[in-house]
Image 1: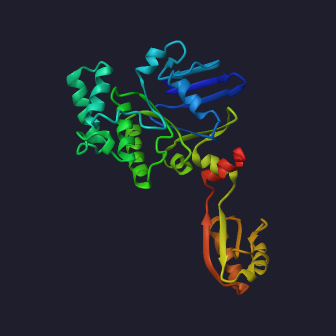
Image 2 (image 1 turned 90 degrees about the vertical axis):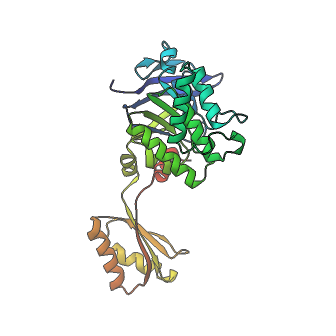
Image 3 (image 1 turned 45 degrees about the vertical axis):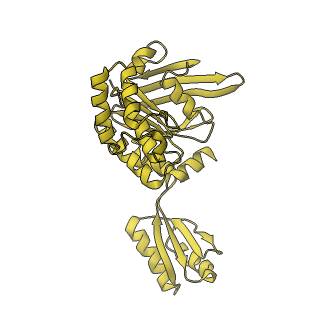
Length: 310
């Protein structure tokens, strides 16, 4: 199977609103496909179609080798889905939640108990396993929610903004869990509003806006579309900005961008380390004191803002 997730011309409308206008996606087995886009771009609609919760109006989608429209039952046997909010029962303990779900999935009581114990250990929830969910923190609930998606050992996992509302430590822990799953061969489709999360986890990224895929590639490929690395120099005195701009213009083909209020100049980095040395030397020769000198790389935030204009 070349692709674990594949869509071609996926379309969906709600009355007078067109949510998807021919979405094409592809994710190879054992990789993470990050789907980015502003609110209302069509991310969640895409996930719901791939998870067989919605029927597409047009186009075709295959998940784990099965057509989502023609073989929905076979698709459901191969997938897990974690939405934006933890789908667990607050009145039950963590262990009871997992065992109940395993029983509903026809694993049998003994196998469901064994699988629950494995997942509780994997997600560092064993000590809290027999406490009610009402006592769990947000991060613990999200880890348990992810664990419930893995009861039946899915080949494909859909994560729709899985770390929304989590603190930084809980996000990092969940990232580690996701990396572990991918290392075992699970394919993950991840939608997220956190661009550092996509940069950290995704092998490929598709940017959706207005129901269309407007850009795709690896994180590095998308960053290169925005531009090269840049040098940012903060001067000791804001009054030196014009003189500094003239000095660096003699060693750079680009026009420096200046911010006189912040006492800062920026320009595209050319010739790597030689370019850094040239700029530093030009400022020193002009007798301009510097308080900070840094090389900045384009980020996915830059990509997102330029592509979507949001």
